[in-house]
Image (cartoon, rainbow, N blue to C red; front, side):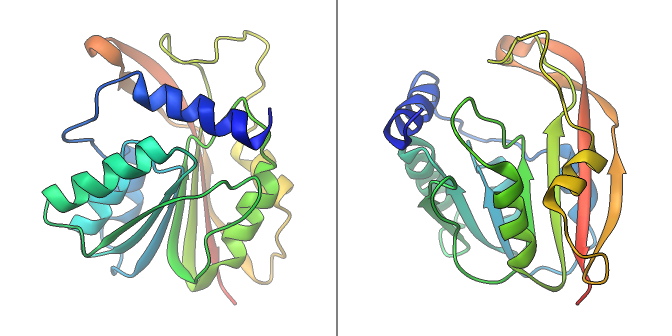
Length: 208
């Protein structure tokens, strides 16, 4: 897929569904971040904006990036509606070609999966280098497919957190893996459908 195709694909995904009025944060984010001092955060693939809005509500300053202009515009409007417009900067960014500038205390990438061209290892390595000392990179991937997922290929390989960490290939003297596991949870999809799914959770802290 070309960049133009990728933009059209993701704009179509978001335009095909109603805008979320009160998107909820991912549970792996809330369980990881609760108790951490607020700082500057970057949300890669912000989607409906539940993570960005929750972080802003906790006092974080957020840069929320997504390839879809539809998603970005909706999030900017939601942030203003929630009185968080001064804490959320929503930007359209194609991670295939560039990475948001700046240094961050937290970078999260939840379910950054796409049928489009994306060198995820390079993106996540860029994220690790964008961390300030003491900052954390939280990567949460699908470990299984929900019944409503756009990807129903039975041959899909879901890399383990350790595989993802190996692919990023960070120097152990400067980055530490704080968490790498595969917890299960009950997810709720469109129309209130529920299913048990597996998350692959990787948490990396920059130590130097």
